[in-house]
Image (tube, rainbow, N blue to C red; front, side, top):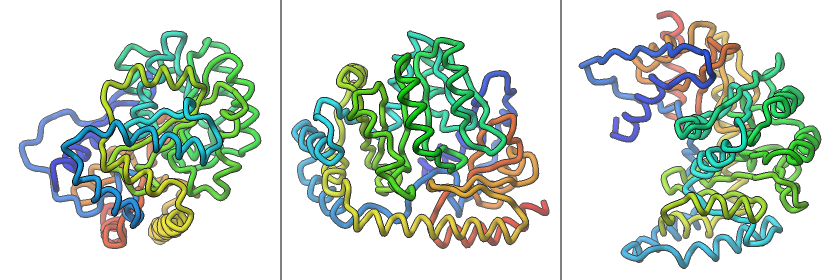
Length: 369
């Protein structure tokens, strides 16, 4: 297992609790024995389909100019995004993967009040904000596992939220919110605080244009749409993302980012953004991965949720941290999200056919362990 995977493995096993009041359940003792070799990396949400041919070619060409900073490549990518998404260039802010913006903006907004979000959700950026002094206010998902928009609105108003964060499709559940309901929520809530909509996986939703809240930004609402090239575009290692928002929100983000982006990533992003042919292929590949995960779970009597992301949320039927360690001891990496209502659930990420085959081989043994 390489260094990056080894670090990720450690984080996934010993991750901190996502909601206040939940005791850390991970074993913090030091094991002198090296971790086992991981043969199925299902703990992170990557896209093994990889970048498009055009993105690969552009990144390779950009390597010839890596002695030089990439400042000149940023304005053309901003202009490309602005044109495609029908906004003004000053409404587009580039970042190092959407995680950077999703971490920094809640940190800034928390000065006005707590950050309100569902649980479980993609809490990594919110936990960053918490480490910088932000107060987080978690609202459990509903009985249908869906983000409870009414409960979010009520909590945000009650606590005087500095911002509301919504991941759509949600991570780890993979569930997609009703577009009309989310749109109405964003319009009303943005009257009192900014609404951050994390659309990391929106490109593989059934109708990306309708499900995206990008139109609300065009209409002038205080909605921040975050996108990334790390997931569907298969460029997790190149770290390029962006937000589309009001110009003042973009200025806030820019004021907090100390560095520029890498030349290969910017070049690759410009070469592939909106590539319909590539996106269709990536979507088909990821749907095939999810179908394989569903089948593996069904064959082993496990329930899972229908996902629109690069992962599937699975009920293992046993304590999830313990089961995570059991799988890890057999060479399979999965992720656990600490949520009071989901003590037995794990998230299984899409991966290569060989990795999913290995998961299918190991899962029955792990369930009997």
